[in-house]
Length: 202
Image (cartoon, rainbow, N blue to C red; front, side):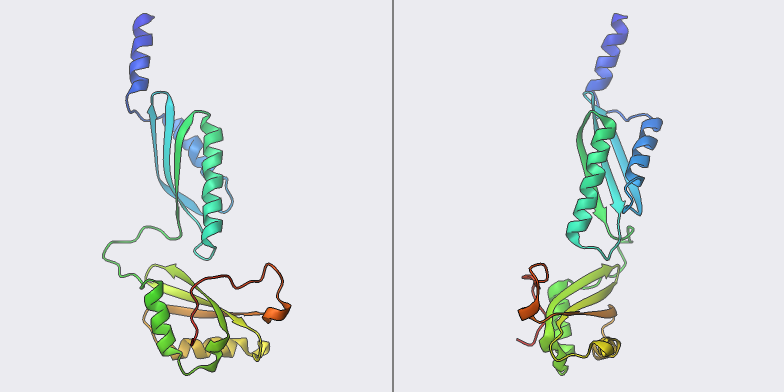
């Protein structure tokens, strides 16, 4: 009996894995969060009686960074409740599956804004742009433009998107989507364009 106790204590002091059954339980907990599309690289360790968990979750690439963080936090909290003894749970939020290191990536924000500014310099509608959001997916980028509705015809939004796409013949540009915002004088407290770096002619 004493030998068994010593052996168990020794095992808990070293870095060991948890049982396959418990790993499967944790997988089910992760997948129970509706907004999680899938997960991968689930790693667990049992050390000094504490469970350490590290996992990558895949979420939609079209949600905001803050929503992705909230989903990751939900996964983290559910895992802690499930283990009951987790000392650390690390959740990495991914918007796309792992890609090969040789795959070319789209440029970062500042480069894209500069190139779009040049490509769209003759389009008068750029004066209406209040916010530019970039959605990355591997080597492609979807550009979401929030424009002040003043002077724009909402019924011809599709034509406006086509003009933006045609003017910017960039290899990484997948599509341009436009959303119209009310004029600042009628905008509510939750419709502020925010303080993101904007693509405008100014």
